Picture (spheres, rainbow, N blue to C red):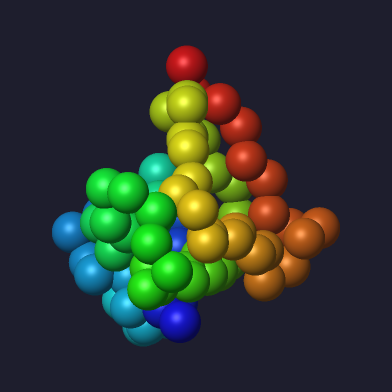
Length: 86
């Protein structure tokens, strides 16, 4: 299982997102990384991915699509706000 971290305040999309100390800045970037872990044709060996989103306000370009076996989890649901930028 792979875990990727997102933080609007401390993240950068040039980070790898593999730790809370080096989060990506956008949920869309984390979803792109998750797609990179999946095969073109779904396979039982595909890796399960969890995207952990830190509290904050996120202005995201739509659409954001997630691959199979991927979930998005907010670390504080009341402080995690996602709004469309387009």
